[in-house]
Length: 142
Image (tube, rainbow, N blue to C red):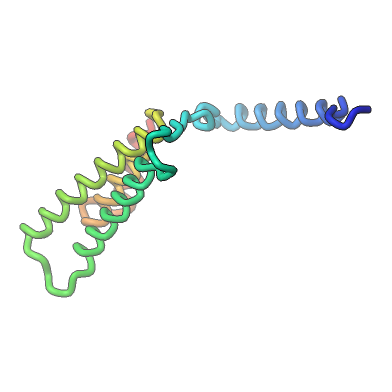
């Protein structure tokens, strides 16, 4: 047998494994379309850096920093400062959502990022408790 050919029994075992995984996913209500999210390749005009991914990560980090400032600042912040920091957090959450949509070009992934980032912002600023946030996400899922 030539070196570059795969034996038929290995192909049959691989096909059986694929069928088993597919059946398992379908029987447990797993949405397999989540695995086929399109990721846009970086254009050649850009350097190897992926600007959409970096802006998403940067936005999320700045959002978390703004939440930390609200929660852990020693002297209590005025309501005006808290409102300003919350608005800045909303801007960064929006930028992270836009960057996620540009990167993955899939509405389901973008929706997950939007819900996740905004829930972190709302929990961090005290608008929702973690229990209320889980209930809200459960309502959105239905």
